[in-house]
Length: 403
Ligand code: HAM
Image 1 (cartoon, helix red, strand yellow):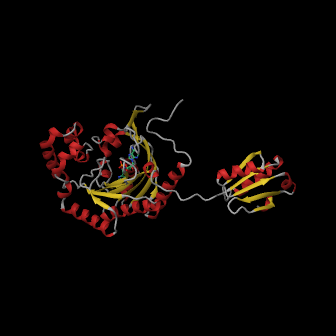
Image 2 (spheres, rainbow, N blue to C red):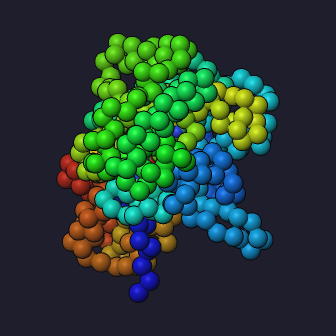
Image 3 (cartoon, rainbow, N blue to C red):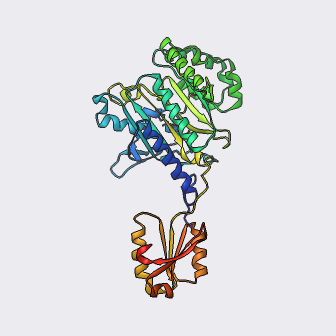
């Protein structure tokens, strides 16, 4: 029997309702914040992700679904959404146009990770990207938008925030950090030893306990920010504070993607196990330029739909729609016509097989409809239909044309 690939999941009823509820809620709220829906391809040139997410990141270094297509192009299933949206932004010359552009998207992402609870190889994100707004108020506004989405979904969270600096303060800090890492090098895990050269900042969020113990006295970027980064970061923190948001400063939050500058944040939940990040994002002021566009400040985030599905409580389902069935098969064509008319405004199920009244009622109840309409021979003689409201239990016979 052929099964879905490891780390890839089918989403079917009733879980699909939670999936749709998350996407619809997030889309509605993003719309209120001025974001517009975009689609970008699932497959992109590998170089796009190498240049944006970063060659030394785990995502690009270890986790890409990468292959050579029939035309000999090196391509890759997208591991995240930002790179494709930035490519789109540049390709359609929106960078040259100037002004502000805000986009949202949702869809599958692919990372060849080791599957575990909350960690899939194909997962779905909902994300937003805002281009052209330099102000840290935009970073704050994005965080408020995520808050609105999670509040609407009834999900609790904590926000971790950090600043990853800019080209002015980052290089100096990097040198300090590398010097410190060389001092403690022998005690670090193999991955971290390699990262000292390739991506020293990522050593900070290594999950190995012995590495974390050694990093206690490591210099933290938040203490070495330039004036401008420092000023933006303290503005952001002040805003989070004054709006009563549940945040924590996390100087070791470096994120798994290399494109961030300044604000970096993650929303975490303590109710879903080890893979606790339910959304993450930040500012990436250099990425548009880095991919060949006109320098454009940008900030965005993405949330993990499957992780949020674990947390979301669906409102109790109300009975909805109409079930139609016959005890007199001659009535079926008229019933189909009625079904088509009713479908212009509501959900309708039709059972084509002749069944007893009891069997029809049972089937209607199982489908969760509000009304059950049956045409028996007596009704058919009068071109009528017997209808029962499954909620109030009220019953009535009405003309087929009058229903
Ligand atoms: P990310 O933190 O890599 O950021 O992913 C965002 C969210 O996707 C995570 O918080 C998590 O909920 C979910 N996620 C990531 N990997 C998996 C997985 N293997 N299985 C299930 N869920 C997963 C980004 O992707 C950035 N593009 C976010 C961004 C947008 N930054 C700026 N703009």
